[in-house]
Structures are given as C-alpha cells and as structure tokens.
Length: 348
Image (tube, rainbow, N blue to C red):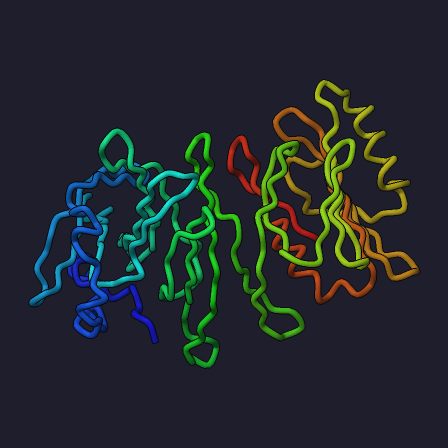
C-alpha cells in the first residue's frame, strides 16, 4: 500500500494528531526527489487563499528532510508540509509549451483536517513563479497518491481515498484527476475526475468530465461516456442513451416575467398536469413533477439567476433508478460562473 499522507510529523506536532510518516525511511534513496530538481524549494514563494509563504527546512532523521510553514493563532493554526523524498508529490514538464513545476503540499488545520493542495509554478523572467493552486477533491477519508505527472498538456494524478466502511473495514476508492491550465489566464480546472456513488445498494465509481460550454453561465460534470451534448437556441440538451434527457434553457435578458413563463410552458406543456413540489429552491417560481401512465417521469423548474430567467426540464423513462445518482451528480456539481454558488436543486 502506498504512503498515507495524514501522518506528517510537522503537522502532527502542531495539531496533536500523534502519527509519524509511516514509511519515511522505507523509500529507496534513489527514488528521493533530488534537490536540484526542486531548484531548492525554500526559494519558492507559495500562495494559498490568504497565506503567502516560503517553506523552511526541518531535519527529521538522517538523509530525510521535510519542509514546512506554519501560521495563525491557536484557534486557526494551520501548516503546510512538503516531503521531498516522496516521488509522488512533485513533477515537472511542459504545458502549453511553458516550463511547469507542480507540487503537492499537505495543509493541516484544526480538527485534524489534512488536505492535499496542488501548486503550479511557471518559469518566467528567469525565475519560478506560482501561477495557480487547487485543493484536491475531498474523497471522504485518508488519501494516497499513486502517480503524479505532466502529460498531454495536463497535470494528472492517480489517487486513492480510504476510510472505514460501516463494518469498520478499510475501503480504497481509486480516483483519476486531470487538471488543465488555461493558456490565456493561467486558471486551473479539474477537467476529469471520478465520482463514487451507490445504486440499488451497489457501490460504483465512474469517470466524469467537466461540462463547461462557453454559451452557458454555469459548469458541472457529466459522465465521460453515454451522455451526448447538443446545443439549442436557448441552451443545451443533454441526452443519455435513450433513457432520457436534461434540457436547460436561458431566456433572453430583459424578457418580462409573463413572456418568460410562456416560453417555459411551451417546453413542458400544461402546468396543471404536474404536481407542485413544496420545498422548491428560493430562486425558483415553479418546481414541478409528473409521473405519467407510460412510466415517464418529468421534472421542471423555472427561476432566475443574475437577472435572467431560465428553466431545467428533466424527462426520463421508468428505468431511472440506476441513472438517478448520475443525474444527481450533475445537479450537485452545477456551479454558477459569476458567483461559484451551487444550483441548490435536485430531483425529488
């Protein structure tokens, strides 16, 4: 089993976790990250949220150093740790024809929270400068990194998350993360990732890709296979293997409420044929559901975001049970581009 990242000495001392890095000495010396490859990590300036810092060196045992930075008062104490003898926390290569170095630092904060943070540096004007960072998705347990590389203009990590199941047995879920860096503004985005879910009592892990069309004001994730995306005059139609579809439409700005409501009714049909869902989102005017005699199930929601009316219409055949978790992930991962806020809507 690969190294578990929670036990890091510097953070353990800070937050009383009481663990040691489990195989600090077991990594072969030839696999240690050479300091010349890191260009002396202590000279690099890191930035994460409101923290800007340089790492300092701590001697642990012979031939092994760790680098860390701590800050904050006791109530909000936090630390960042880098262990260079681990070949899975550093990589370098070319992205968009630019020299890139990337690190994973472990960020420790209160309540024994340890988070892996991805940092990206670009070689510019004769020095290495951080361009962006990203917190790896929360896998719900301890994290191990199996591989970390730059390939095909992407930063790619293969990760396992682990934690006790209901019977207190360790379970390991593989995750594949593919990060892209925007060539124009340097922004980082998680383009591909796994999502774990249960369907009819069985656990699954499925690869998803980012859903981020330039003509739409939101982003989300959809499965890499079996989901087809087609743009429409007012938005997008997402179809799934003849089981059903999700249609999202945005009505032209400055359209009156009455006219926008008429557009919504054109799409879904007579509102009186639907049941009204009581706990509708705050931003919505209608949240509706219908289960007709053919077995089809339909959901419709109509509301506003950023002074623009929009609707979401979901139409599925009776075999929705196995696909319901996938649809839920699409809605759960929906975030508005202008605010980053989630949609706050799910099928009921």
